[in-house]
Image 1 (tube, rainbow, N blue to C red):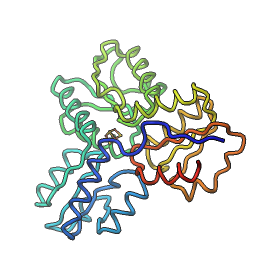
Image 2 (tube, rainbow, N blue to C red):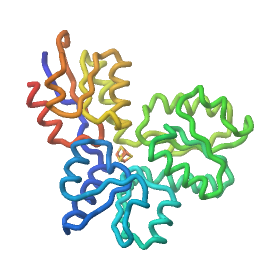
Image 3 (cartoon, rainbow, N blue to C red):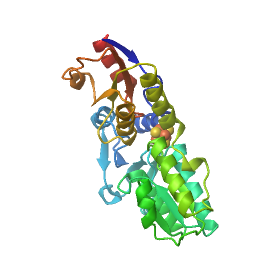
Length: 283
Ligand code: SF4
């Protein structure tokens, strides 16, 4: 078996920025509270915890006068206001792609358009976007798949605006947009109705690798990482035998027998060192 890296891999620009902000905040030695996981990766979270970062699920867990860091996934206006009212020091590591979705939602609301968020309702990124839409006075609904569109609470044919979670499968997003356009012919979209470029580039690279004869794909990343799970689904749907693992230790337990050409890729929150370790263990 040969093993090769599928490019691009490693941190995306948003994760690079968020991790850099987190490390910088910890340099002073004080406690920094991160609201939710900074990024969905055990290795990164473990490193930051060892340097003093505390991960919390609610602002109530941050003491008065404390410092809170908002993750790459962003937060809604209610959370921002609550932090402000309590005088917390805020470090904002929201990815610019996510911030752009928040701005788009406010723009739809200003035009009195109902907002459709294509994504998984339980994901923190989607929760922040929904909060933004509600705060701006918009009617809002979340759909995850084309079959969800028929149940939208907006009248047939009404003009609606759509955005999407940045880390979905690009193919699924396109199918949902087609279903939306069929039900709402005046559908309003923009670049925020497509996955972010980091997500798209990694998905296209996996498809190209399988189309070029690769018969196995190993995706490095956490089970809680949306873009990691989508990469594994795309590799599998493309016809490759597919595995997901967090690091080299997990990879050592995998059985790649029968695979002739293995491609290794990673979710956007998997550190480059983890990737390099795995490649070294396979070649
Ligand atoms: S995956 Fe995309 S949206 Fe998420 S942090 Fe990276 S660049 Fe930003």
